[in-house]
Image (cartoon, rainbow, N blue to C red; front, side, top):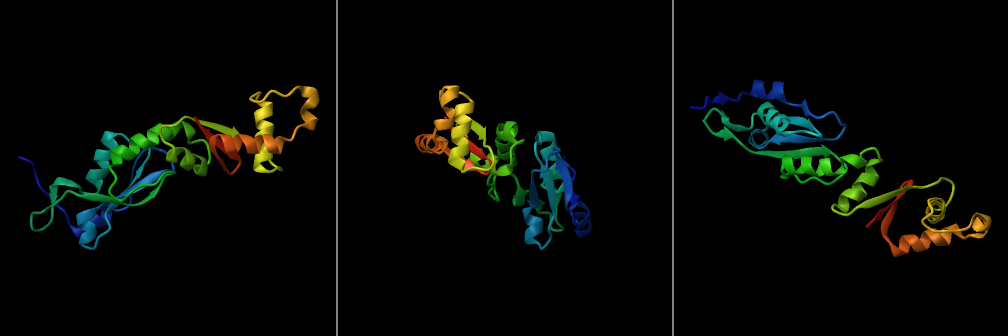
Amino acid sequence: MMELVKVTEKMMMEQDGKRVGGDSDHWIYLTNLKAYNEGFLLGVYLHFPFDEDELAQAYQTICVGNEFVDEFGYSYEEYFITDYDVPFSVGEYDFPQSLAERYDGLEEYMSYPDEVVRVIAKHQGESPIIYELYEGMTDEERLGYILVEEGLIMVPEHLRSYIDYEAIGRDHAINTSGEFVGEYFVEFL
């Protein structure tokens, strides 16, 4: 038989705001719903990436599970997400396991600024090509230079000073599925 743990106000105050999970700066704030409805904030910062054991530890920390009961014997079994800092949108009733999988799918892009990762997250399932643009020009001109420099558009060396790089970049941006994000152009295949 499972041993029941009576959740007290003191217990909630001691557990609130702890950190569990991975070592990134991205997190969700997982909150005990029943405690919240009773007027207590009992939550944990669950940092990405996290595994099943760390998620179980987060549930334990915020007293979510059938073994945790209030003074009347009703269990604390529901949670919700009250805050987050990840480069994709999160709903208050999203499953943490699904969010962890989504984060894992974006992990190779986490070295880019969050706004680039947000654009990639919106196009989940598509393969991005990320161009880092030069400074001091229009977005289209910078993209044109990159396309020529990378050899994606063939221009003989002796003609490069005559080329309208802005037109090349503008045409590429119009004719592809991509967008300018800060100092980057993210294209999707």
